[in-house]
Length: 353
Image 1 (cartoon, rainbow, N blue to C red):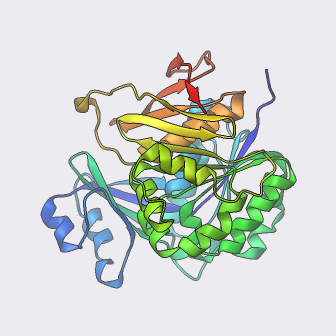
Image 2: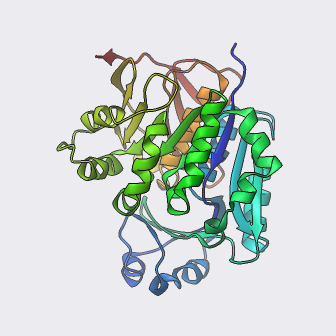
Image 3: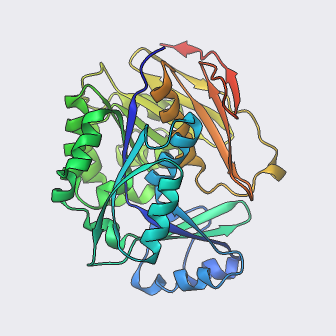
């Protein structure tokens, strides 16, 4: 069996404030169903409104931290042995909840603490099975070059082989992202990113273009892929064709080419690698078993990272849904795992040139 490869995740740590709302609530804050955006001054009241809901819950989040937590859980690794996470919070109530809960789950939290802004938060407005996300980055915006050069972060970088940053990190400082990419390649690791949300492509496209040549693996859902196709003038809405064109963008990494993985909800996940392309069918989940889709995309990447960390897994596919007790995942791998409480299926992936 191959040695376990440690995982480094960096993102904007946000405490999710989650509650069910109605269409009137979305209209009040000018939110669209199944959307993601940064908060405006006029929308700041959304967090207090969510906290007033009787079903409001607090979840350590931000897209990257969701992925880190799921990777740790899927791998069933000893706590503190596999996944490290880097970000910036404040020394306040929200920050304490976020850090404590993530550490309980086994993620090593290399957090900078600032007194210049409160811990970031994300309003999770659930309508039916959809969720609308509205983020206030606050302290997450203030991660510093000094923290990225701290011993804890440098040690985590040196020990890791799998590096994952979300597209949301491009909203802070693209140079920080490129530094992590170079650090990943310096140790022979793989640098992975996610397009994350349409607004990243729309408003941070220049930063994304600067980073793409360093990206070894890129993830996206089909909505983000179509937005990326529009921005790059690919002149296609076919997800696999967009993936092929994305893989062909300039690549300066050490791994022989870029891998692209695009999910499509209940439709097959498509992939392109340096050696071929294909798709992986999604096993259906009964609609009545799905509480909501919050974190499904983040969980997908968590499953991918866990599979890559534990052994020579070519492709993984993860679908997830929230239950009242815990996150339940369905993971399809090309390598069967033992002694792990998941539904695991060996699959073969058809590749075409």
